[in-house]
Length: 140
Image (cartoon, rainbow, N blue to C red; front, side):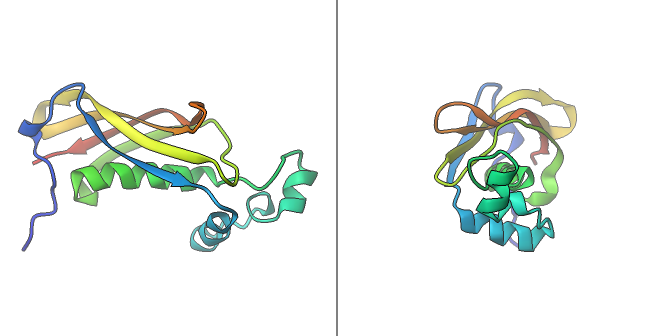
């Protein structure tokens, strides 16, 4: 059986950055994610309702951005079962055409092959879509 881990504990150092991932959010992302998540709040899929609620347009589900940040981490570690803890704060709305960069860096190495990552999701203007984010991963 092929080993899923892409990186080993001994290969990382505090301060190392993980590869980034970029995504430009489109209205269709909101529709697809609504179907996948079951969250059909119309502010994410109907521009008229979003405008009635005071927003300029539909915007991404916060959990959509969290999922893409999780994807970024898992792409680096390889095995989704090695993501042990993951927390974020939802901070900025992502509107159609906004590009979000997801990334992180090694914050701390712990005993037991655990690595703490400071991770983030920032829009093209540098403002956070997600803030105060952290992940703990196991690396073989």
